[in-house]
Image: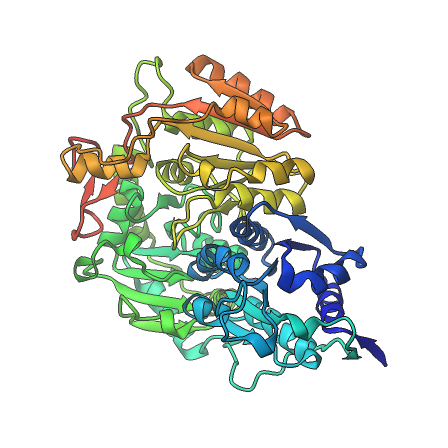
Length: 574
């Protein structure tokens, strides 16, 4: 029998669970845990400079690996600083376990120093939460937390631990629980075979079918199965913002991202389709534009691990609840068993129409100008060229995010990391750091803007301490670009607080943190500077790129319209 304190149990469990990294910031309520962590050499703790960055680092790690990221924060402001990152992970279904300190249990509810109700505050943005009431329950609770975070529809779980639960003087029996015991939690492990067969038959009979694949395919490790099905039936494939990379972006059958800033081809193909196979996607507002006019002639097959997501906004004709990997594996097998190929003439006709749309607009065409100024689209195309499309790319939120998802060709899953549901500025740099820590030999880029990067720029200090040489691609247009675009289009160019009239010298700022800074203002310098940056394998490089200040992101769906209703430029619409 091994006797451990509550603090030692927390650390020992993390080791036994195979956790490699903890991202956190110490404070009074968790000092017993930090003292126990001091003695544990198999787990690396990353001392961030702000707790929000700890959650985004854990999030980035989770998106790239599929494993739960682990965060450790103190009570009160430490816990509340983590809330934005928890909400970010919740909206995008990212596995995360957040351990928050709490005031001693006999002081809970007394407004003690650094007390906040972390369970109450986080309740709407977690998959589940636990409050430790006795040190002996720590191993079982932590096992449940990891199981909940990583299974079914993944998400963040909070464990709130009062300080007296980790008292080093009180010892209890520790046994690592091999299995989580949860009476009322049993996510589906396979889909309904009858529904899967109906879906396969509907796809085979369709005249204008399309696959609409989301982040669930990435997190569900179903990219191979999705690609096999698409190839077998010669189906066009479109991805959501979160799903990019689950189907090769350079493949002929990929018609681009869909939705608010989706491609002309993808949005028209969706609108005119007769069968939509939605896989691991939730028909969110940035995709469907308006539910009333969404794809009026299409039958919907919807595959999702979460039954609450099916028919929530768009009614599914064939709902299938189950893990996307096993459902698609069974669907492929059923299609092979049926042995009936889609009508070749019908398929050819559908592809002829799609190729006409693609030939008219390409995926994301833009005016390249006369070369006197750097277009943000060109900067992303150059990033893709220099990294050969193999980089992990984390982005912040805004125009630069949309340019990154439009012009970087993601051919593998788990390479594109961004805050899709919550739209969190400040996500990009710490997320990139979480990836770089786990994949030190990979190219990792953070695509950002001068507004977003300043949200968590203090993490440049963390990068130096832990040798995280990410490359920061700052598309600097001197404004909150997406806000300014809406003000152009909706508010008659009344730029209310969207221009940043005072900006730091990012080159000097990067150098002050001990890194390399480069300023790019001329298009001819873009490629050599970017190549130089990525050649510096052991240095963080901040590339501050001056881009066209007037550029908009197009296409852009027209509010309350159908998927086919888009602005194609400042003066042209469908």
